[in-house]
Amino acid sequence: MRLRRQTLSFALSATLLLTSAEYADSAPRKTHIVVLGAVRKVAYSKAGDPAGAAPGENELKIRALLVDGILKEWTTGDAHDVTDRSFVVRRALRLNDGLPQDKFGNKPGDSQEKWVWQRGPWLLVDRVTGHAIPLKLPDYDPAISRPSWFRDYAAYCGVTASGKSLYAVVAQIAARKPILAKKLAALSRTDEAAPVCAPPEWQREPLRVTFHPAGKDPVGFDIAPGSAVLVEDSSDDAETAPTAQKDRPN
Image (cartoon, rainbow, N blue to C red; front, side):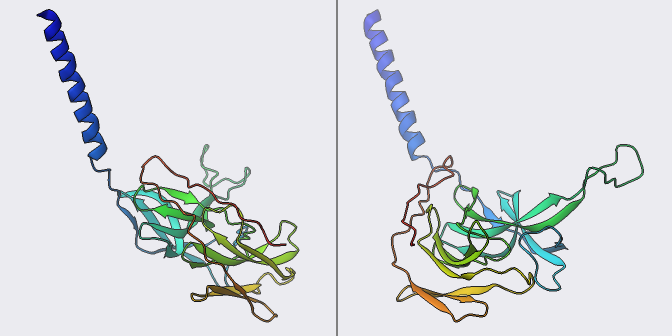
């Protein structure tokens, strides 16, 4: 009799465990609320900002990136929807510009911090998981590169590591190497205020992008469309996507 009771108890426990596991698998995942807040203006620090500034630009328009009502990042500029759940936007940085010998205030222990606003890297934001991942765009130069977004492609004028050559670059999110990298011209930074390259222009069918380097004729390139390498994970724990490699043109 005792053995029968133990067997029934074990079977009941196993049934409860399996039912709990099935319920956990079928339970809906937490839904995050990801929004960009209202625009506000802050004093923009041109000094030391590698992104540079437009002539007469003394203010930066920023918006808060809020996840479930909590501030995650500050952003600036327009956002671009990559898919119905992912978008890219540029981060706004608040940097401590105080020197060790600087002192703000007259009392002992007063703060040596001096906060300034500047432009930062691009972020890939997932509305489902609430994650914001910095994008590493190849040959990206904050002072020159002005990405023009289409689907999950970013077209911009890039600069080689030596800083001597201007390249036409098309990068695809989550790909390690650019799908297009062609030299446009030698790079001269004699006039920092003059634009080196206007924003590229996209054409859908056939897929084509045209670059406009300053002082030169426009240059167009056909892009072979491929499947998007951006993989959006349904798990709240995943923050990175698999990468795909492509050979860089000579």
